[in-house]
Image 1 (cartoon, helix red, strand yellow):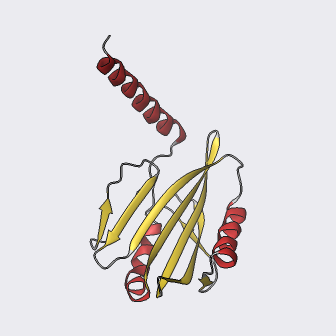
Image 2 (cartoon, rainbow, N blue to C red):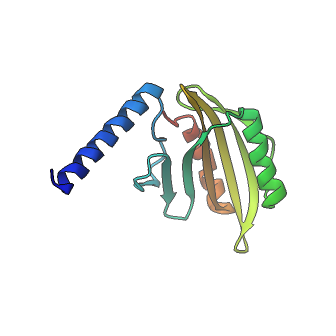
Image 3 (cartoon, rainbow, N blue to C red):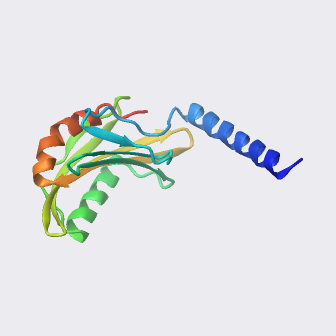
Amino acid sequence: MSCRVADLSLRSALCAALVLLTACTGFGPPKADLPRDFLVLDRHEPSTFEATTADGARFLVRDFVDRDEGTLAFWSAALHDDLVEHRGYEPVGDAASVRDSAGREGTVRTYRTRYEGVEHGYLTGLWVIETSGQHWIRVAEFTAPTEEFEAHVATVRAALATLQP
């Protein structure tokens, strides 16, 4: 058997295993419905969803395996503490509850920060997703300079409810 055929067979087997794993857990790559002014970027990373606007607003969703199986309350507090105590973000209001398209409860918070001398808005959404065998942490982030942030934040908050799977 040539190396090319062996590589193809191995890739096919890995793809089939990934499809089977996703089907068994009911969990796959993140997606969201965003307004037309967002361009969804194709980065070919199965655990990431990324979009941007022409005016520099960025929306990113990433999934991480949580082998320690922390709760939503734990990870929400840990993220908030890291942003405020270690990175200098300023909270804007309190945490609020948010649900994704599957009805899973998460938390959403808004912050202000300065990046390269420019004030930015920063929104985080966080979910802990339990699948058979492990937990996943899903983090949604939206950031932009303040004016652009304010122009898009309401539609991004609405898009959080469309996050799937």
